[in-house]
Length: 238
Image 1 (cartoon, helix red, strand yellow):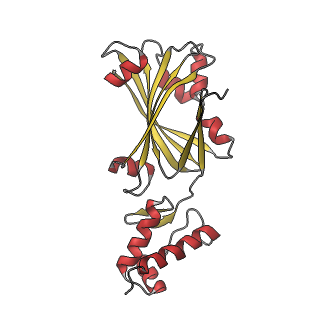
Image 2 (image 1 turned 30 degrees about the vertical axis):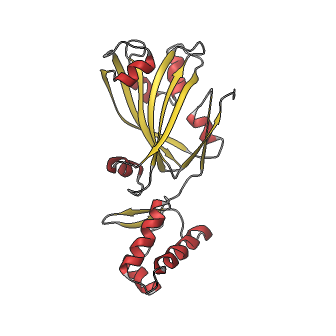
Image 3 (image 1 turned 90 degrees about the horizontal axis):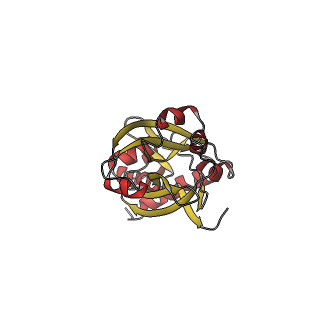
Protein backbone atom coordinates (compact mmCIF):
# COMPACT_ATOMS: atom_id res chain seq x y z
CA UNK A 1 0.00 0.00 0.00
CA UNK A 2 1.46 3.45 -0.90
CA UNK A 3 3.01 5.32 1.99
CA UNK A 4 0.92 8.42 1.25
CA UNK A 5 -2.46 6.67 1.52
CA UNK A 6 -3.24 8.50 4.75
CA UNK A 7 -2.77 11.89 3.04
CA UNK A 8 -5.53 11.06 0.58
CA UNK A 9 -7.88 10.42 3.50
CA UNK A 10 -6.75 13.64 5.18
CA UNK A 11 -7.18 15.72 2.02
CA UNK A 12 -10.66 14.31 1.34
CA UNK A 13 -11.88 15.09 4.85
CA UNK A 14 -10.21 18.51 4.70
CA UNK A 15 -12.15 19.30 1.51
CA UNK A 16 -15.37 18.35 3.25
CA UNK A 17 -14.47 20.73 6.07
CA UNK A 18 -13.60 23.57 3.71
CA UNK A 19 -16.67 23.19 1.49
CA UNK A 20 -19.10 22.87 4.39
CA UNK A 21 -20.03 19.25 3.76
CA UNK A 22 -18.92 18.71 7.36
CA UNK A 23 -20.34 21.47 9.55
CA UNK A 24 -19.01 22.56 12.97
CA UNK A 25 -20.25 20.18 15.63
CA UNK A 26 -20.87 17.36 13.15
CA UNK A 27 -19.76 13.88 14.09
CA UNK A 28 -17.58 12.10 11.54
CA UNK A 29 -18.35 8.55 10.40
CA UNK A 30 -16.91 5.83 12.61
CA UNK A 31 -13.41 4.53 12.07
CA UNK A 32 -14.80 1.38 10.45
CA UNK A 33 -17.03 3.39 8.13
CA UNK A 34 -14.05 5.54 7.05
CA UNK A 35 -11.98 2.42 6.40
CA UNK A 36 -14.72 1.06 4.15
CA UNK A 37 -15.30 4.42 2.45
CA UNK A 38 -11.66 4.98 1.49
CA UNK A 39 -10.58 1.36 1.16
CA UNK A 40 -7.61 1.88 3.44
CA UNK A 41 -6.28 0.42 6.66
CA UNK A 42 -6.98 1.48 10.25
CA UNK A 43 -3.54 3.09 10.57
CA UNK A 44 -4.15 5.42 7.59
CA UNK A 45 -7.50 6.58 8.97
CA UNK A 46 -6.10 7.20 12.44
CA UNK A 47 -3.10 9.09 11.09
CA UNK A 48 -5.30 11.31 8.89
CA UNK A 49 -7.65 12.14 11.77
CA UNK A 50 -4.75 12.79 14.14
CA UNK A 51 -3.19 15.21 11.64
CA UNK A 52 -6.43 17.21 11.31
CA UNK A 53 -6.85 17.15 15.10
CA UNK A 54 -3.34 18.60 15.55
CA UNK A 55 -4.38 21.44 13.25
CA UNK A 56 -7.31 22.13 15.56
CA UNK A 57 -9.95 21.14 13.00
CA UNK A 58 -11.22 17.98 14.66
CA UNK A 59 -11.78 16.85 18.24
CA UNK A 60 -11.14 13.15 18.89
CA UNK A 61 -13.07 12.24 22.03
CA UNK A 62 -12.45 8.85 23.56
CA UNK A 63 -15.64 6.80 23.68
CA UNK A 64 -17.72 9.43 21.83
CA UNK A 65 -16.22 9.80 18.38
CA UNK A 66 -14.60 12.48 16.23
CA UNK A 67 -16.26 15.88 15.88
CA UNK A 68 -15.75 18.95 13.70
CA UNK A 69 -14.48 21.89 15.68
CA UNK A 70 -15.76 25.38 14.87
CA UNK A 71 -12.40 27.13 14.76
CA UNK A 72 -12.66 30.86 15.45
CA UNK A 73 -10.16 32.91 13.45
CA UNK A 74 -9.04 35.15 16.29
CA UNK A 75 -6.87 38.17 15.60
CA UNK A 76 -5.77 39.53 18.97
CA UNK A 77 -4.10 42.95 18.90
CA UNK A 78 -2.01 43.76 21.95
CA UNK A 79 -1.65 47.47 22.52
CA UNK A 80 -1.57 49.96 25.37
CA UNK A 81 -5.24 49.40 26.11
CA UNK A 82 -5.61 45.71 25.39
CA UNK A 83 -9.15 44.50 26.07
CA UNK A 84 -10.23 40.93 25.29
CA UNK A 85 -13.90 41.61 24.60
CA UNK A 86 -13.15 44.67 22.48
CA UNK A 87 -10.67 42.67 20.37
CA UNK A 88 -13.01 39.78 19.71
CA UNK A 89 -16.34 41.59 19.56
CA UNK A 90 -15.02 43.77 16.73
CA UNK A 91 -14.52 40.55 14.73
CA UNK A 92 -18.07 39.39 15.37
CA UNK A 93 -16.88 36.70 17.77
CA UNK A 94 -19.07 35.83 20.74
CA UNK A 95 -16.94 35.82 23.91
CA UNK A 96 -17.94 33.97 27.05
CA UNK A 97 -16.01 33.53 30.28
CA UNK A 98 -16.28 30.72 32.79
CA UNK A 99 -14.99 30.99 36.36
CA UNK A 100 -12.52 28.26 37.33
CA UNK A 101 -12.07 29.25 40.95
CA UNK A 102 -10.22 31.77 43.08
CA UNK A 103 -8.09 31.84 46.21
CA UNK A 104 -6.01 34.10 48.41
CA UNK A 105 -2.42 32.86 48.56
CA UNK A 106 1.09 34.03 49.27
CA UNK A 107 2.45 35.70 46.13
CA UNK A 108 4.87 33.72 44.02
CA UNK A 109 8.21 35.32 43.30
CA UNK A 110 7.05 36.26 39.79
CA UNK A 111 3.75 37.76 41.00
CA UNK A 112 5.37 39.68 43.86
CA UNK A 113 7.98 41.17 41.54
CA UNK A 114 5.42 42.06 38.88
CA UNK A 115 3.09 43.76 41.38
CA UNK A 116 5.82 45.44 43.42
CA UNK A 117 4.88 43.53 46.57
CA UNK A 118 6.97 42.12 49.38
CA UNK A 119 7.80 38.41 48.97
CA UNK A 120 4.97 36.30 50.38
CA UNK A 121 2.41 39.12 50.42
CA UNK A 122 -1.20 38.04 50.02
CA UNK A 123 -2.57 38.05 46.48
CA UNK A 124 -5.97 37.09 45.14
CA UNK A 125 -5.75 34.69 42.22
CA UNK A 126 -8.78 34.32 39.94
CA UNK A 127 -8.86 31.71 37.20
CA UNK A 128 -11.09 31.78 34.12
CA UNK A 129 -11.69 29.86 30.92
CA UNK A 130 -12.55 31.86 27.81
CA UNK A 131 -14.70 30.57 24.94
CA UNK A 132 -14.91 32.15 21.48
CA UNK A 133 -18.00 31.11 19.53
CA UNK A 134 -18.39 28.21 21.92
CA UNK A 135 -14.82 26.92 21.53
CA UNK A 136 -12.35 27.09 24.44
CA UNK A 137 -9.46 29.30 23.36
CA UNK A 138 -7.64 30.23 26.57
CA UNK A 139 -7.53 29.89 30.31
CA UNK A 140 -5.35 31.42 32.96
CA UNK A 141 -4.86 33.24 36.22
CA UNK A 142 -5.07 36.89 37.22
CA UNK A 143 -3.18 38.07 40.32
CA UNK A 144 -4.09 41.16 42.38
CA UNK A 145 -2.85 42.65 45.63
CA UNK A 146 -5.32 41.33 48.20
CA UNK A 147 -5.08 44.49 50.30
CA UNK A 148 -5.89 46.77 47.36
CA UNK A 149 -8.55 44.62 45.68
CA UNK A 150 -10.55 42.85 48.41
CA UNK A 151 -13.53 40.83 47.18
CA UNK A 152 -12.23 40.90 43.59
CA UNK A 153 -13.64 37.43 42.69
CA UNK A 154 -17.10 38.32 44.02
CA UNK A 155 -17.21 41.54 42.01
CA UNK A 156 -15.89 39.76 38.92
CA UNK A 157 -18.71 37.26 39.24
CA UNK A 158 -21.29 40.04 39.12
CA UNK A 159 -19.77 42.50 36.67
CA UNK A 160 -19.30 41.68 32.98
CA UNK A 161 -15.65 42.63 32.54
CA UNK A 162 -12.41 43.33 34.37
CA UNK A 163 -12.67 46.97 33.30
CA UNK A 164 -15.99 47.28 35.11
CA UNK A 165 -14.52 45.64 38.20
CA UNK A 166 -11.70 48.18 38.21
CA UNK A 167 -14.23 51.01 37.97
CA UNK A 168 -15.85 49.67 41.13
CA UNK A 169 -12.51 50.32 42.84
CA UNK A 170 -12.29 53.84 41.40
CA UNK A 171 -9.95 52.97 38.52
CA UNK A 172 -11.27 54.50 35.29
CA UNK A 173 -8.37 53.59 33.01
CA UNK A 174 -5.45 51.19 32.88
CA UNK A 175 -2.86 50.18 30.29
CA UNK A 176 -0.69 47.21 29.36
CA UNK A 177 2.70 47.67 30.99
CA UNK A 178 4.41 44.63 29.48
CA UNK A 179 3.67 41.43 27.57
CA UNK A 180 5.79 38.30 27.14
CA UNK A 181 4.80 35.41 24.85
CA UNK A 182 6.41 32.04 24.31
CA UNK A 183 5.31 28.75 22.78
CA UNK A 184 5.73 25.29 24.27
CA UNK A 185 4.20 21.80 24.11
CA UNK A 186 0.89 21.57 25.95
CA UNK A 187 0.59 19.59 29.16
CA UNK A 188 -2.04 16.86 29.14
CA UNK A 189 -4.33 18.80 31.50
CA UNK A 190 -4.06 21.92 29.32
CA UNK A 191 -5.01 19.99 26.18
CA UNK A 192 -8.02 18.56 27.99
CA UNK A 193 -9.22 22.00 29.15
CA UNK A 194 -8.78 23.49 25.67
CA UNK A 195 -10.24 20.40 23.97
CA UNK A 196 -7.33 20.19 21.60
CA UNK A 197 -5.07 17.42 20.34
CA UNK A 198 -2.28 16.49 22.73
CA UNK A 199 0.40 17.40 20.18
CA UNK A 200 -0.97 20.88 19.49
CA UNK A 201 1.21 23.53 21.18
CA UNK A 202 0.09 26.37 23.38
CA UNK A 203 1.12 30.01 23.70
CA UNK A 204 1.89 31.28 27.19
CA UNK A 205 1.17 34.99 27.64
CA UNK A 206 2.44 36.74 30.78
CA UNK A 207 1.41 40.34 31.20
CA UNK A 208 1.43 43.23 33.67
CA UNK A 209 -1.33 45.85 33.63
CA UNK A 210 -0.69 49.22 35.21
CA UNK A 211 -2.29 52.54 35.98
CA UNK A 212 -1.43 55.30 33.53
CA UNK A 213 1.34 56.43 35.90
CA UNK A 214 3.01 53.01 35.69
CA UNK A 215 1.78 51.60 39.02
CA UNK A 216 1.22 47.85 38.55
CA UNK A 217 -2.27 46.55 39.38
CA UNK A 218 -2.43 43.06 37.83
CA UNK A 219 -0.20 40.19 36.79
CA UNK A 220 -1.60 37.51 34.51
CA UNK A 221 -0.53 34.24 32.95
CA UNK A 222 -2.82 32.92 30.22
CA UNK A 223 -2.52 29.72 28.19
CA UNK A 224 -3.82 30.08 24.62
CA UNK A 225 -4.47 27.38 22.03
CA UNK A 226 -1.80 28.17 19.43
CA UNK A 227 -4.01 27.04 16.53
CA UNK A 228 -6.88 29.36 17.46
CA UNK A 229 -5.27 32.77 17.84
CA UNK A 230 -2.81 35.04 16.08
CA UNK A 231 -1.28 37.90 18.03
CA UNK A 232 -0.15 41.25 16.67
CA UNK A 233 1.30 44.24 18.48
CA UNK A 234 0.28 47.88 18.29
CA UNK A 235 2.23 49.50 21.17
CA UNK A 236 1.10 53.04 20.33
CA UNK A 237 -2.57 52.14 19.89
CA UNK A 238 -4.93 54.34 21.88
